[in-house]
Image (tube, rainbow, N blue to C red; front, side, top):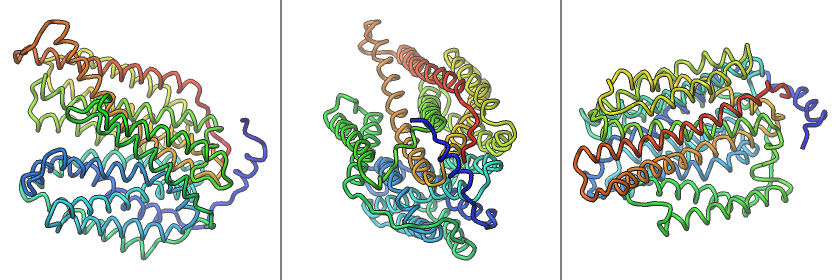
Length: 485
């Protein structure tokens, strides 16, 4: 459906609230930082938690999987929250829940209470991330929005990049509980700071909550996120009855959810945002980038330790510079986006991405560590050139009344694509390994044969990532600067 002139008039005539955006954005960034940091800070500590509580790895993984599952199921309803409650109410609720969850996790005497604390944290995170982006869209003029979204990119990439490093240092010198004690004062300070300076910047309404849409959304996104997450772990696969059942329920429910959103008067997620071409292209690019990143950031640590024979510490440190560089580049890319628009960033960024992913086919046993560090750094610079411009340009085309829906859809599909990417590339890698054994008639592989099989499987996974990167190049050619908002 074409964008009408009335849409353009409504978008351009909408007045931004007369507020000072700096303290508002600062408060929300601080809250988002600790929330996103908590997503990765626990990964290194799972072994210690398993030992303390005497639980198996399949149980301990719920501390990570459950966190992602809650975020994936609650972000879709965030559009309703943004319209129903004020910015101040949502921030205080989100940070209160996150702080409470952090406290519960830190003092938890048994694993079940630790899991409750983590899920409570996740509820706060699911509110905080879309609240941050939606607020920026509301208070920052379009000509300066790229710089603001660049700061969001810094937080989103910097926090998870340092998470495993901080976690490793704390677990090595203290107990895993100090991971939560470390976050707690930061979270509490952000909450108190927000209560003091945060003002309401959006108009609220009382939209009717369609309960059936919420249930279908929960089953749809929750089933897909859990199904793909489970398929990427341990011995599970897409043929596993439980995994298949979750995915089937997820996709059927998601299809019914989309159908219902076109029928109800007040949709939970207004999927009509996809009629805006730059938004649709932006969503597709971000999903492909998320999946390509998982090809590199999930498969590479396994490959580095199993085939390149790097130590666990070395593998972790190899990934750190790229994450830090990505965070540092995001604000710069934001300012360049404001000045030059998306195409001068997206087209070269996607070409660099495809080129660097292609070089991973030459990352073979014996390669120096510094080469892998440079590869990873260039990869993450390319991601910085793509993620924020694609996201911001897509949201810029929407009229303000659709900001909450566009933000919720972007964040939901990022979570879903992350889960899909994790399962897909692990599955491709393991299938490649088994194919190598079968083709060479290997039943009991030697150490050298196991390395060769892992190398073959990883290269298959990198090849899949390369094809996805090529798809982003094609999409970038169709991008135009959005001017409707």
